[in-house]
Image (cartoon, rainbow, N blue to C red; front, side, top):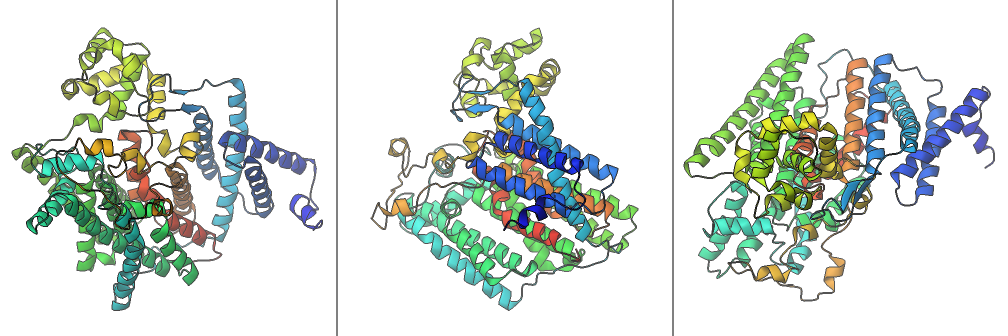
Amino acid sequence: MDSLIPNIFITKKEDQYSLIKYLLICIETYLTTKYLNWPFAFIWQLLFLFISCILYKKTYNLKKINKIENIILLIVAIIGTINIVISSHIYVTQRYDGTLKNNYIIPFYLIDYISAIFITSGLYRLISQIYKIIKSRTLSNKSSHIKGYNFEFDKKTVKSIIYYAVVLFIMWLPFLLIYYPGFVFGDTISSINQGLHIAPFDNHHPLFYTLFIAYCIRITQFLGAKDCTLGCALYCIIQMIFLSLIYSYYIVWLKNKFNLHKITFYILIFIFGSTTYIANYSIAMWKDPIFTAALIGLTIQLYQFIDSQGETMSSKKWIVLTTIFAMISIFSRNNGLYIMIFVSFWIILLLIKNKIQKNSHIMKPLRNLLILFVTIILFSQLITGPIYKKYDIKGEKIESVGILMNQMARVAAYNRKMSASDRAYMNAILPIKQYKTKYYPCCIDMLKWDSQFNAKIIEKDFFKHWLSMFIKNPRTYFEAWVLQTYGFWTLNANDIMVSITNIHTGQPRNIHPEYVQLMKFKIKFKNLLKHDSLRKLFSIDEWSIPVGICYAIVFLLSIYILLLIIFKSSTMSLFPFTLTHGLMITLFIASPINYWPRYGLLIQLLVPLYIFIFIDLLKTNRHQ
């Protein structure tokens, strides 16, 4: 045992410089784990220290990376440090309805800036050493016409997908029976009101989602149901079928693409079928589960396009599936359109890149793919534009500018610099003196729902006043953005790391009878298995991996792959990552609340894919 220690920390070339480096690693590790403030800090310190020393030894004799690679990785390390240090200073006690007194950023001191230098050094060392190993094991490949794994829908594969979809459905069934007819939320109530013509149609919650609920209720009432209970159950059953098929497709695809061992495959099936966090989405009457499942399906489609070098464009099945997934994504959540626009923009970049490199074989498939996505976007705009307008179906502008509105509200709440025109504009939206008590740093909902909030004002000259106030108050704007979005990018904010409220945050009527009395229609909530003790086993909420940590993995992987493409001529592609990055960009720009796991569900469910890609990168002499 004693002989192992010298092998890790001491070599024949050991000198004072190396000892200083090991001491520096210890300081960096201590400060990084201190600011991360994760549970069991001492264990994390030992783990990070061990990994850092091992990586230092492993990469000691590896070829150095070039200047540009160093600069890019240093920038990534700086971003990581900013994330960690700022997050450690966020203090939030009431996420949804907390005011300035409850939610704020703790001031920074000199020790924070000194610590940031050491943390940056440690992060840079860690990510650059990992990159050195990956780069040393990745084959250069100047030939761009190399095909990867091509997924085929043969009879055996289809049977396998259906079989495991049935397994997932059965594993989720107890949740439906215990919380029958499914979790009904405020969003659900709003859409049912529209579907039953109690309220006029609007596109605040996408019309596709509203009509889906409405037709489920109408079908069951046509068959004799006297209330909305059976209609809600039908919605959940259809959603369970769709989700189980997509998740099964995803897991089977992972197994085939990465040649997973059977045990790994069955573990994935077990996780997707038995974890409360995933299972409860199958009976949650939100738009997010179907939206996320469609994006998972579309992610697989994009991988198949890359793996086949565009040959999938000649497959009618592939085009139909891609179109269906894209359309569902657009019509089930309002940010779906912007994600598809982002994908289209990336296709244009790929066209430019391949034209410069004279990769003629991929140009036609990329052009056809761009035409497909542009057609989908234009068709969706035809529906949500002229057709919606004809039937007076409108959305709310405040939904798309929520973060921007909160930035302006923070300026008014703190009485920061404003021109007379800006002050008059803010006063027209809400009496200027009320912002101090009605500005909620972590959520826009309470402000926009205030009885004195005049949403009509923001229809005109909003961006003009937003920019005017930004120029005078950039720091205040940044603070407002941090408090409104940090849940989706933080690696260490205390309230996010321990958060277990996902379903509960939506106040499901199943467990909030006080809200049931306010409904203008009947839904009978019951436990069909009758034993309430089962609710402890099949609970409503459980902890999930924070979205910020999941996205950190994606972001770092994307940087590694980008560098391999540039400096090793790797045939890997960032294209399938566009959906994940597109989703996160929409959350960074227009999230209505600082954190709600359901908004970032896609990133969480794709974690297995990210892990297998990372493992694949570390495999020695593997063709990409």
